[in-house]
Amino acid sequence: MKYYIYRNDRQEGPYEAKTIVNMRLSNDTFVWNETMSDWQPIGTIPELQQPQAPTPPYQPNYGQPNYGQPNYGQPNYGPSPAYAVNQGSSSNYPKPSSHMALAIITTLMCCLPTGIVAIVKSGKVDSLYFAGRYDEAVEASKSSMNWSIAGIVISLIAWLAYVLMIFVFGISMAAYS
Image 1 (cartoon, one colour):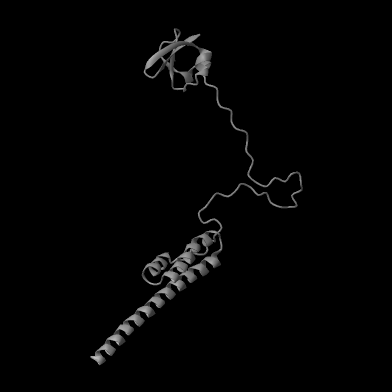
Image 2: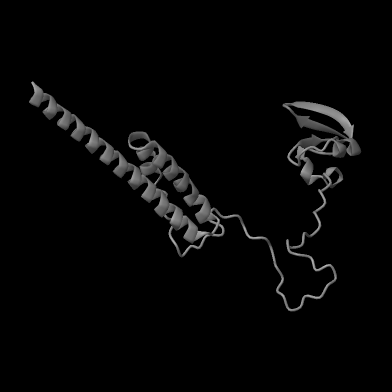
């Protein structure tokens, strides 16, 4: 039996039923032939039903296969865990501060060498924490803070020495005039 199809706002056909099935039209596409009183969706006509895609076979859990070896009482590994941002870190411990802002300020305004070391140390805090190495992350955080403070102290001492030298030089010049 031949059918007409209606798509893209126009009538096409006539087409054989097998041809329409091979066209892979949606079930909402309207068709008509001489035996029908009105246009009907393809999904309502059994002869024009689109073949259903086969369902994929069952996928087993992602786990270690036993390769025919005995289990020795070990539990099944089950599905792999979902990815999480802090995977590996313990939720019992808060993430230590990286002190990155202080390290950058120390680098730009105080002491370049100690500031750079502080930036490197503060950059390690997050990666160590998220790798589950909490104690090392805390140590890197403390180290970053210590290097920043050392840079600020060195800078203050240098500025005080500079002001003191200008003051002493000014007094000595006044004594000779």
